[in-house]
Length: 373
Ligand code: NAD
Image: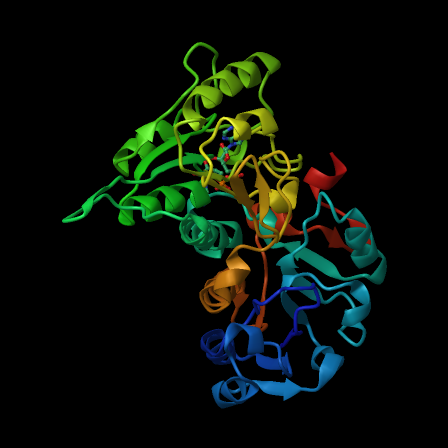
């Protein structure tokens, strides 16, 4: 069983899909590991450390030659996989709804694309879930970045020269990233409030010591819908939400938006008119900027200033914490493959529940229900 890891091809991608720790763990299962030279440099892992852990470090795309499994953070274009075994597995994020052509190319080339974003949100797959591990770091980094852009302090400070007021932070979208954003803002001493369309999050917000701000007159999502994800809301809900947010947002110093809907563009939550009601010097961090953005006018990797308010958002927020993000991503991949490792054949054999959920292509065809349906 030969596992290969290429240097990430996507511009600005600083993470890497294997770490010395997971090289050792895969080797203990009997696999050989080849890493492309320089793959870990942006995540502070020099080639030498991979070698010490037992990996071969190959020049350029040679790493992929004869590979049974290729690991990636973002799936490379299929051309980069020339030399991998026919039918090789590629476990990475594929952005399958938006990158349909790439998925088709994988099918045509006969590779088995395993999309880590499609990992089911079930208890036994929690340790394999890259969306959770990366969102958690992203929620933390969003708050730190906003704090850095903000020209005032976060905690209340009573000093001899007078009192500094605590910053008011509002988190919109309370999934994994939002929960970490709330916790981080609380740790920094801010007064935190948060909202979501899923009413199950109300308790979670309160348990972190923040104030829930919810649309009360129109029904939101009561239980945890399919996989716990949100769906697009009715026009009536969107109108009620916009009114509520307008009142609340004008009093906030920092807003962190994290709202996503799988397979759909990010919902627009903050309009230009609402930004205009905020105090000059306020900061909005749009974590959904790469998926179209929750905030009117936000631009990936740029600080946009509108009505005296700074709007910030990264196309790859977790990548700004490349070492930790890589360590968690690599463990997710190891946990995924090792859970299905068949000792006799020395390779992983996926079961139906997880295999069918993550497998996009097989036998020259697209096979995933979510893409075919
Ligand atoms: P996500 O990244 O898909 O979305 C972020 C948040 O935005 C969600 O809480 C969503 O409800 C919210 N949102 C969507 N539209 C909105 C709108 N118009 N206004 C306000 N908020 C809006 O979410 P996620 O972090 O991937 O979490 C999705 C679900 O999966 C949650 O229920 C979470 O608890 C669950 N989860 C389960 C597991 C597991 O059991 N393995 C692991 C991680 C997450």
